[in-house]
Length: 226
Image (cartoon, rainbow, N blue to C red; front, side, top):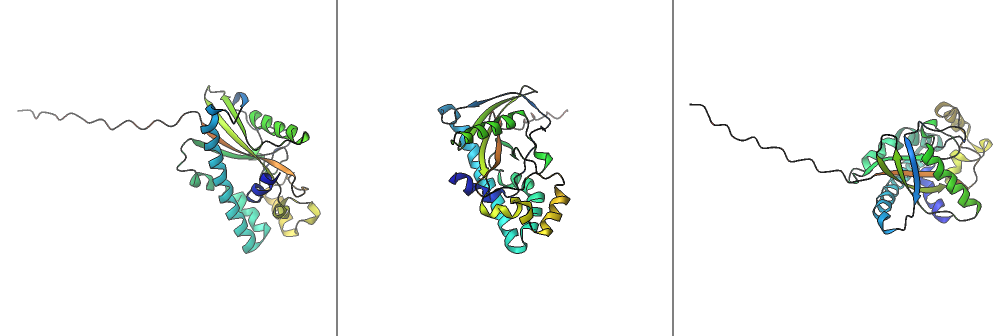
């Protein structure tokens, strides 16, 4: 649970999905693999490095906004900046093709889980029932277009500072309640307690490293006509 609490400060705006709603699904099939297996070490390492960077970047943005202007402005920062930031901090990790935050409780419908993500959420939920929370999940996903990708998931939870946006509805500031209704009119992401599991942060890793661009062809010199 300690790992969850450390990470959750960076994800105060983590979005979720209702149990009855799935994202448009590109997935043909998916299976979980052993993240400790030697053949999966590189995938896991790439995914966790990307997650660490994303958490640090989001934490910095959100905490700065809270210190300057309060939780209602931090909500705007997370709503408007979270996704653009990911492209900037992953520029030297070319196999990272996407990041996503998802959960079983909705804040933004744009982050509803697809079938593979829902399976990961359910697996964590089941693990929590037995008191064993996985640090990371690694999943091999075959897409409808016959491409293969890898997904690395890390669970996150609610830290005390997250309650400013995710605590009991009656505890939220009136200004924040207005902004929540503006940005997330169907919000389901309040009513949490500190330490409660919030959802998953997911990083997509391409199956293979991008191939280097072929060298520019050199045109053979032409012989001037006499």
